[in-house]
Image 1: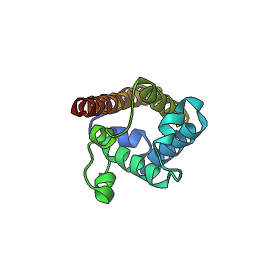
Image 2: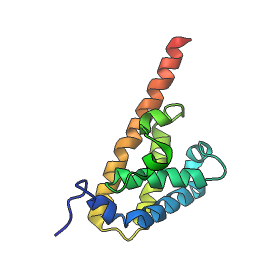
Image 3: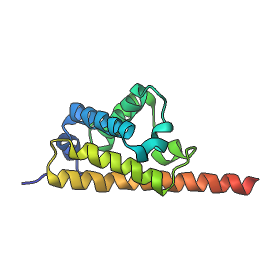
Length: 143
């Protein structure tokens, strides 16, 4: 019987726990560095991706129902607000999701978990885009 993703730690376990999530994050950032269409989102990150990799892995641990590693190391986070200062439009959101899709497909996940994970990741990706647009519109109104 397939676990119910999104309940308890089922998603965290399906992702391979912390080690599996770190492999996913490494594959994601490697893909972001390779893909020409991801050049804009890659430029939003520092040259050295160690902290970015750590933050994303820690965030995903808690987000997928595992231990709250991000909060333990960095404190609370609201993903859209934390990214609102960046220029994220549809192309950037889509490039981020494309990199994540390749990274997810490279993992030994079940088809059901891959589908679930990509559907769930699209939600905060869209929220980041909306927050970015809203922040820019607010800045435009202030001028």
